[in-house]
Image 1: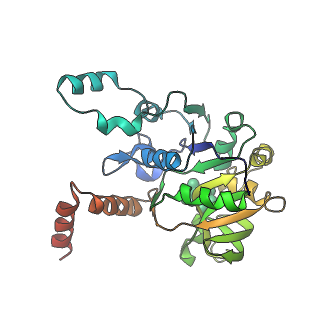
Image 2: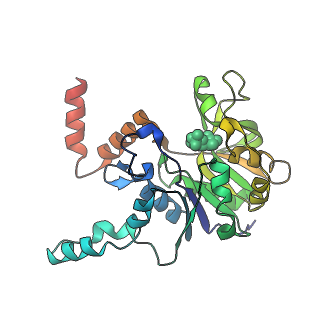
Image 3: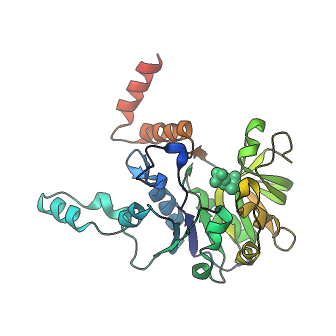
Length: 289
Ligand code: G1P
């Protein structure tokens, strides 16, 4: 079957990043590097790999480093060129002119509100949402795997992962229906259920493919868990009318919104790198004994 192609992706990057203070006092958490690339760069690369043509950043105050990152740095580039240094290392930061749009979320009112802020740029098209602090390592990338699934089943898709029982209160949780390979039917969704009340331990991970109707649901969405306007609550209302599936990612997720997860991601990437892998491995073995 053929479904309306997915061309746009929303990157909510307005969050305060309080879990990483003081590092994130003057720097957006999405600019924290995994080895030498900021988290947001990995998410954008993942979107491009999945065929996304337009990146929509929902930003906030103090996030201008993200805009600068995806712009030309004249002074830097002129100096590097005059010193005979290659600019290749900056290639990924240069996207096609006009392919990034920025919209400001004036107040941090929740993920659902952030996504809704992008409604006019998204228009009447399906769109992806990528949360940069869910760092997804695998090949093909997570969104590409989801797009492949979308081309088969259409509708709405979320990345799904089993989490330990004592962590369900930190996630959107799925009431699962029938499973078929990497796809699981989504029968219900609840955001951050109180400990002991989760319908399963299948959680929502920060990759989504959504139909534009969710914007109309978000328009009237009241506050949910944590007093915020939740994307999960709006998605829950889409289940009746449209196909809705969870996709199990063939790869590894690192929760880079969490310090331990962030360090693990750095280690995992460092160990795979040709330039530093052996030095890091040697150090790790020596340190761990
Ligand atoms: C958000 C979503 C949640 C999802 C999580 C994945 O929560 O609201 O449903 O499970 O991302 O990382 P947050 O981590 O922003 O609190």
